[in-house]
Length: 354
Image 1 (cartoon, rainbow, N blue to C red):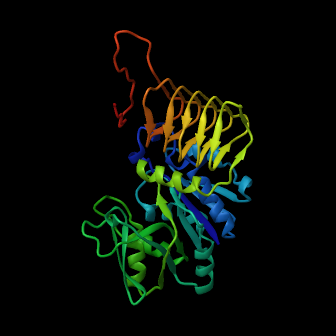
Image 2: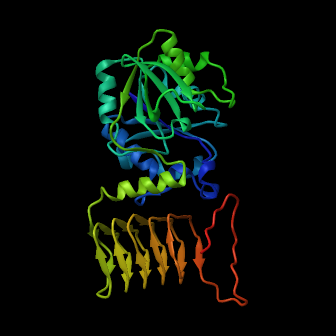
């Protein structure tokens, strides 16, 4: 069995962050989202992985390499344009052949992993097995209708969903999926939809088994979802201090201080993680905050946020909350006169002013 991880999307819902980095590499609890997927695939006993890449190929390849840190054998498959999940499957035909495979969307996060799903597929041997979860906004996803425990219909992002069962970004297939992807036509979005391909399998009498998960899952393509994923994963961590916390500082609750990090005259209230080489001075870092490596926080308060590498936050009078701050960003009080707000913001930026 092989795995196919899809990392070809452009991440428009997370811009401007994704103007400069792949959405699959945005860190959740200081670990790129994609790495959770790689760990889940290894845990499920799958070691041969094809990663479909697009315009962010260079970053993905640099981050994952040959897969050896996870005990995986990784190959890269270039998709010229993101023309749908079924198109990605066809793009990977030479790699997949007729093998069974698990398809995993690289920006999805499933807290409990996929081992049970893969084991079930191997045991029951359907032509496809789809992972479903009950969600409050099913119109954002592919939606499944079940009858008698069987999948009878799939619709991609319906305006009026027939159920609240959304397709989670993990699918199991045998070689029949190639015929299905070749048989369908582009949707109104101009994409080859995997929901249409699975519907073709159903219409042709193939066996498509549903698996409804009861655990936690997130598509991290939006800021709110990413912050919630960060919150959930921080709650699973064990406290540890490998950096330096001075006598004037205190940590409360589940806090991780990674090696080379310094906490000076500050309070860190967990769940929170402070990355390698980061320096926190005269500041407060509140619950559900992940601060990546080589960040500097001085004279400021931050809570329920994610701050990426090599950024700085200096002397901010109000508390920063519910925020995602990108790489090499400077947030600080300006000494220039007259007093005024001064910004340099990229496309699709959002700023909240007190």
